[in-house]
Every structure is written in C-alpha cells, then in structure tokens.
Amino acid sequence: MDKMLRQAGEAVRRKVLGDDYVDRALGNADDFSRPFQDVLNEYCWGAAWTDNGLDLKQRSLVNLGMLAALNRMHEFGIHVRGAIRNGVTDDELRAALVQIAVYCGIPAGVEAFRVAGNVRAEMREKGEL
Image 1 (cartoon, rainbow, N blue to C red):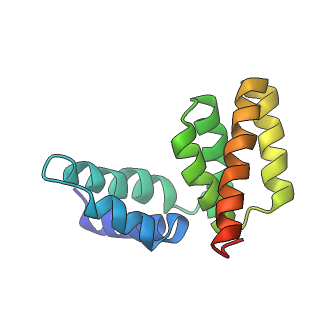
Image 2: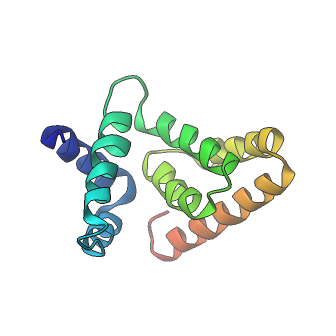
C-alpha cells in the first residue's frame, strides 16, 4: 500500500466528510475491517479524490449521480453532506437532483430529494448550513 496516498486520501476524506465521521469510521474498525478503511483512504479518497482533474465540488456532484443510480441512499446522504461542505449550492444540488430524477427515474429522484432534505434539516439544526 502507498502510505503517502493513504494519508492524502484520509486528509481529503476528513475535509469532505468531517473529522467526526472519519474518526467514528476508523474508531469503529476492528481487526477484520481496519484493512478496508486503509483501502478506502488509499483508493477511494486517495487515488480518486486527490488528482487535479476535478475539484471537490465536481467530484461530489458526480458521486451523487452515481450513488443515486446505484440506489445507495445511505452513502448518498453522507455525500450530500460532503457536497454541501464542498460548496455545492442549493440551486446546484436541486439541479443535480432533478437530473437524477430524469436519468435514474422518478422514484430515485423522490428518494434523493427526501434524503437530501433530511440531511439539510440535520445540518441546519447543527448550525452547519
């Protein structure tokens, strides 16, 4: 494994998802799942999020589309929060959700709007929005 890429990936993961989320994910890892956290940091966050091809906001929008298409709504919610942290505006988020509804189907769009609404409400309550 590439230690520098893993460290760079963890740094981006913390920037996008927040220290609390990453600390919880790493803290909940056991001997069985800890190596997978390394894979996430190195490949998902290091290799896929640290090059200069897209900025973090663009990456977030791409992720939202893919996660909605795959019906991975738990991860979708995590990445809605990350997208907002990366500067995605309400207008941009709404446009992405409408595009998800058109290309992934109305039920996916309904669920995406529901999850995004819940995340936004939670963020408002915590003073993050």
